[in-house]
Length: 260
Figure 1 (cartoon, one colour):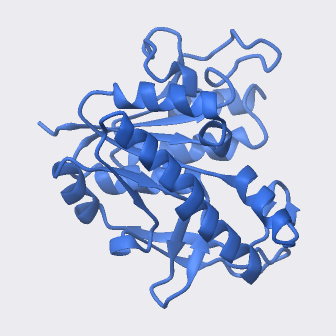
Figure 2 (cartoon, rainbow, N blue to C red; figure 1 turned 120 degrees about the horizontal axis):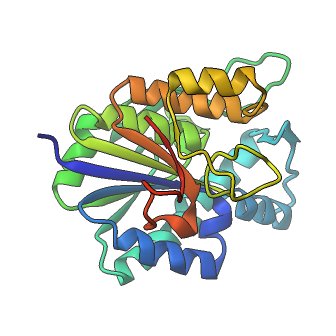
Figure 3 (cartoon, rainbow, N blue to C red; figure 1 turned 60 degrees about the vertical axis):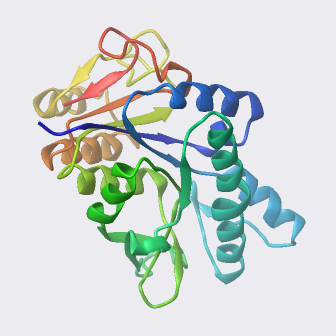
C-alpha cells in the first residue's frame, strides 16, 4: 500500500495576505503525513514591477512575460514570496524547501509558441521528475514550489501554478497515494453561482459531462475540471476543490468538491 501524500495549491491572494498566510501555515502544518505546497504570487509581482518601472500586460487574465517581467517574477516568486512562506513554515516546525522547476531539474518545460498572442517566456510543462521529488519527501522535506520552470537550456519560464500542481500530482502518483487540493475562492464547485452553499460534493467523468451539457459548469471552470479529471485518470487518488480556510474541514461531508 502506498503512503499518503497531500499536495496543496494556493493562490497569491493567500500567501500575500498576512492573516490568510497565518491561517494557511497553521492548517497546512497540521496535515498528517507527507505533503507539498504550491503557491502563486501574482499581485506582489505586479506591485514590484510597478516599483521598478516594468509595465504589466495581461491578456485574458494571463500575464505577458517579456524579458523584464521574467526577471521580476523570478525575483518575486522564487525569492520574496517563496522564502517568506518557507520561513513561516519553518517557524511552525515544518522542514520546508523552496523549489523552482530548475532546482534539481524537477520540472522542465518548453516555451509556448506564439499564436494569436505571444505570451513571451511562458512555459508549458514537458515532464516532472517524480523520483527526485519523492526522494526529498521521503527524506522528511516538504517541497514548497513556485510557478517557475526551465527549458534545460538556461532559460527560466513563467508557468501556470495550477498546471504545475496537476503535473506534479501525476508524477508523484507512482510513488504515493496522492490527494491534490486546489484552494479557490469558493468552498467548491457550485451548482448555482449565486448560492455559495450549493457546493456539488462529488464529480466524476459522467457527471461532469452532464453538468456541462446542462450549462451548470461553463466557461473557465470546464478546462479546470477537465484537467482534474485527467489527473485522476492518470493515477491521482482524488482531487478536492475548496477554500484555503477549509483545508482541514471534513471534506467528505460538504466542505469541498471531490473529483474522483
